[in-house]
View 1 (spheres, rainbow, N blue to C red):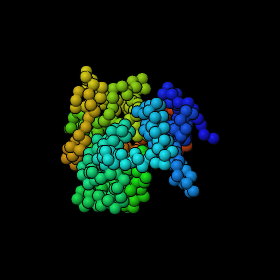
View 2: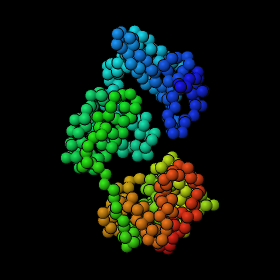
View 3: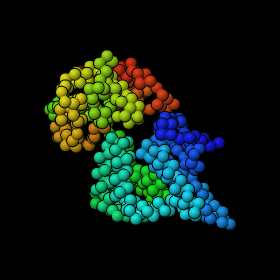
View 4: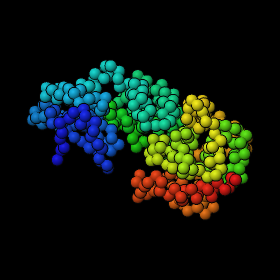
Length: 393
């Protein structure tokens, strides 16, 4: 049974998502006008209609849906106006989706570079910490190749050709990253009703698949990196040492904010908005980690603990810093993320239970993902990191 409601801006604003499914509610005043609420709380308008004369025997055609826009960008009044206009066109035998598509083509609103800009502004910036990487890759490789082309004219062959060119000129790594981002862009365009189907859906490019890394630094290598970090000084030196001691991801340590510190718990808490699993993560500080954090500068103008801008922005420029770290340490063939895997491996060597290591790493545990209290397993995580910290005293 369809759920119906008389929409007002206030009632739509208060409409809560339903766990585990997408909610759809129809307006009682405007037949066919529907509001969809995703599990994540995103709200969007659409209109359901049948075009007169498009069915067999001169009857109305099959039921179709056309997206109208997102709430609150499109308020209730505007959504009703758009829906009624679409229904009037359908009653006259014109498909409103066709009309909108023709108008959009005339205005150039569906050319790739315009859609790409909208994707960056509306999706990547809002949902991706590294959205600038997405913007740079798309503007460097995809936009020059498809500029001026309506997005629904870019087919599978064009996508393969682009990836082939990138792989030959810039390597498979660059092609792999571009494929990842154009896939997200096309999926977003499909969801917005700008495309019927993604041209890269189900694309078989095994040479561009991700190969899981298994580099684990030995204790001798880690000690060389530890010593080199001391030579580097602030801010990269303390950052690298904290990566070793806490086994957290680079973004979580690099973005360390004074407001994240929990002095009473001798820990810091990464907010859900900054954590990969979208859940808060409390990280106990072992004695050497606590000493590093307490020695970090206290800025007057900003709150980031690791910064080259007096705390106003978090530390950046990792590629150059990593290159210098390699020269100073003499350790080759590793990434900053390998420090996390290495810490986990050596905690296991010290006898720490795998379940407790998983909690330190912030991995979702099957069956309880997203439900456990942020302070659960805190003693176990502290014991694990304290045991690991003793290796660096």
